[in-house]
Amino acid sequence: MFLAHALAAQRRRPRKQFDLAVVLKQDGYLLGACGLHVTQPLRNEGYLGYWLGRPFWGNGYATEAVKGLLTLGFQGLELHRIIAYCCPENVGSIRCLEKVGMRQEGRLRQHTWKHGLWQDMFLYAILAREWRRAGR
Image (cartoon, rainbow, N blue to C red):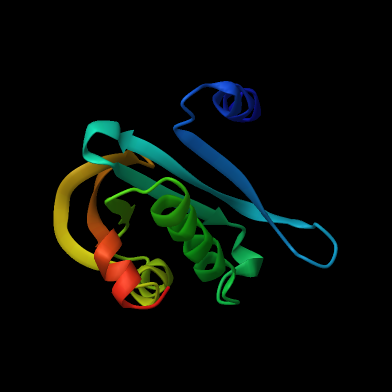
């Protein structure tokens, strides 16, 4: 289902969804997935997300993927702002988002239904000028 949806999104014009596999450079082994979606075209805003299998956490793969998504969003798509959400308990994801220059803008209370419970989420964002200023 996900793959069919991602392939269909590739053909839409203008393209607003970029769902990608995260693979090892040397052999193409699948580590996870990442994506950038243009969520507010009139405001030039996008949303990024990523998922890696647990054995691959802590190796910089998520950071590399997020850097690539930010480059796509700000250089390729000329977005103004890109946001991401993460669980307050996910220290690795928080570290990843902050490492690439994203800043926490708030806590969204009971924002996501997961594992039978409402969960809070942190909202992170970065503006194009902040990304450029950091020399990315």
